[in-house]
Amino acid sequence: MPRLYLRMPKSMVTKYVTSFLGFMDIKVGCQIISLFSLFNKIAGVYGIMAMFQGGSFSQLSLYIYSIATIPIFIWGLKVMSDEKHQAALKYAHLYFLDHLISTGWMVLFGFWWYGFAQHDGRPISNSSHQADIMHLIESLESHYRTPEQMAQFHHSTIDVNTPEGASEAMLRAQRARQIWQAERGFAACVLILGWAVKIYFAILLYAYALHLRHGTYWMLPLSKSRRANAVHASAYQTVPNENDEVALPTEEGDDSKTRS
Image (cartoon, rainbow, N blue to C red):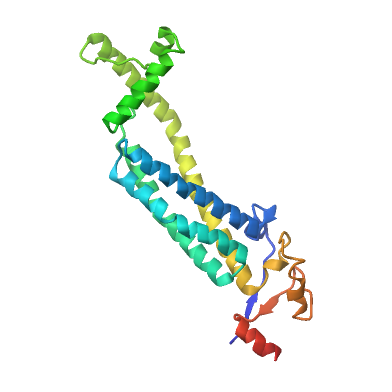
C-alpha cells in the first residue's frame, strides 16, 4: 500500500482549521460542537410538547427528526473522545448530512416568512389552546400595568367592524410593516451567519478526522495530546515538529509489516 503524505500549509486559514477558532484544541472544539448540536436536538422534545397546542406539519416533522437524531450526536461525543479516525470521519459525514437536511427546513421557513407571512401586527394562534394562553398572559399583565400601558402595548381586542377599530387595525398594520422593513435584512443576516457557522463546524470535524487518520493530530500546536503521544512519536524513531512532512501507513496492519 502506498503511504499517504500530509503537509500542513502555513496560512491564516490553517490556524482556524487546525484549532477551534484559533485558540482551542481542535478535539475540544469538536466536542463543544457536538454538545451544542445535541442540546439543539433535545429542544425538539419541547417542540413536540408545544405541538399539542397547535402547529403545522412542517414543524412537527422537524421536531420528530430532531428527536430521532439525538442518538447520533450522543455517539458523536464518544467518537470525539476515542480519537478513532474511521468513526470520526463517519460522524463528520453524518453531521454534514444533518446540516443539509436542516437547511431544507430553513429555506422552507425563510420562503414562507419572507414571501407569504403578512407582518400586519395581528396576533396569530394556531389553535384555541394558544388563544387561551395568549388571553391568560394578557390578563396577568393587566394586574401589573395600568389601562393606559395596556392600551399603549395594543393588547386590547380590536373590533374591525367599527370605525375606531378599523382605524386602529390599519395603524397597527402600518407600524408592523415598518418594523418588518427595518429588521428583515438583519434577520436574513442572522440566518445566513448561522448557516455558515455550521459549515465551519463541519470543516473542523473533517479536519480532526483527517488529522487522526494521518497521525498528525498530536503535532498540532494546541493539541492536548502532544505529550501523551510522545511514545507514538518515538515509535518512528524521531520526534517531528509542526514543519515536518509526515508519512504514515494508512492502516495499522501496514504499520506492523513496515516495522517487521
